[in-house]
Image (cartoon, rainbow, N blue to C red; front, top):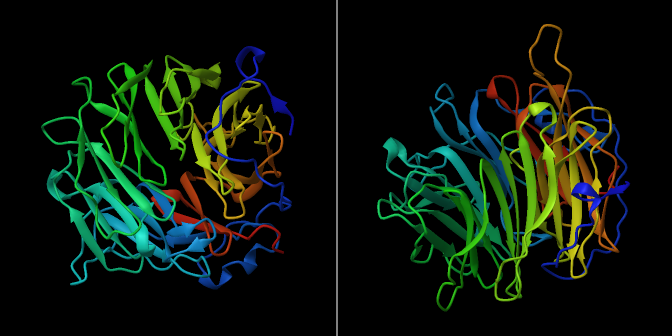
Length: 477
């Protein structure tokens, strides 16, 4: 696809995080997916004969609240360590009532029946609110959410098939925590502390079975912490990035040695979304979007060695098309199997939202490429996930024209494209693939099974019910 230039036509250059660019691999051809079908779990992979994605199938017949997540524990990009899981919050009318649910994803990549997470003694573990989930060590998954009766946040960990154990109770304030995993299964949780203020960081290494003692770090102001993000490197050094008051801050917390001083990255206003990666050579990349007064700005900040910041770069500035806000998922940074990095963000072209990608390697940042279709409508970025073969999958929705008499679109198609980071510092994506034809879809999420190179996508449909589809491995019939 034709690469595009940055805002006002200026080329964008930044220093990379990590390693060499990908070997170019063939991209699987894409055909439109079949229409929505029934629940039949035997459809698995073969039903995708007319395209790379299986027909959408129901996962839960009652409403889900909040966005679902898909997680696959792994010790390497192609080494699964345990069953995957689809994780979501069920509404009060669901069997078992309100609270966390998960469906184990086994070798066929077809999600199993919804289950309430339970302890080894069979007791249901209550977990609600906005959930965060990540892969953990020993093939386990880690889920963070709100404890019952407003008692702060809680963390549970276990195999997707159970049982789960509670890692801590009301140590954290009732706020959405940040959760991430890296490398061999290291996992980190960051969250605002309780009444004393500040932030808490807890890390579990791949050889451990529980979190280390919390690391407390102060914050420079009394305003609420927002857009909190945590990144890990292979040593479990951590980087925290957050919005507080009218500024964006970063602080490095090494696994050994003193914490770095808090650095103020930029003044920010309005709604902020942050993505961050930490490399193994004491460098980091932070991407964020700032949405305020009908305008969106997307920035990239790369650190010098020893995590010294100060080279912010404006990737794109735009007036929000038709006044609609930028997708909440933008921007996204992912580390590929090659150790290079890919960036996706929401840009604008011809008065519509589009999906852009760029490659980051040691030579710098490549020119951005628009990968969404040019059919004259909006393409709203929903996700970018790394694949076991070294590529990545971009996920987005395309709202359909509203019905006559309707004030706004109520249906949107769900699409994806598989791509690679190829020499010299470019991204190459295949044509858009239909994951689901137009419908009342929202909150899509996806992840790859490292053992099969198949992707599992999950999203909410009519009445909040969950649906899923499975993508064949690259090159599969």
